[in-house]
Length: 104
View (cartoon, one colour):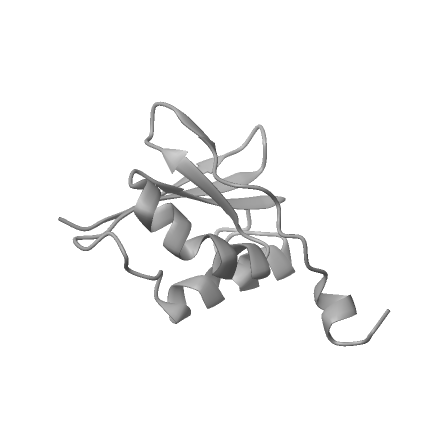
């Protein structure tokens, strides 16, 4: 069973992506991640709704763990739970992209 449902929360200006994969250790496809990197960069959805955050919500802790670093690097938050209740997964990344590339 695979699930990919997107919900926009107008109050918090957040796009939530509820994602379930057949195999728990499956990465979010790169083209999907790129889409949300663009949403964050443009600060709006394809429908023009303002966006401040994008959150991926995984029901499986193994899936959340497997995707957390890549999503965090892209500026996307990782959550564990479902559509009725979720919580942040893990800590914020301890790296700075600017520092990693010698920009600061």
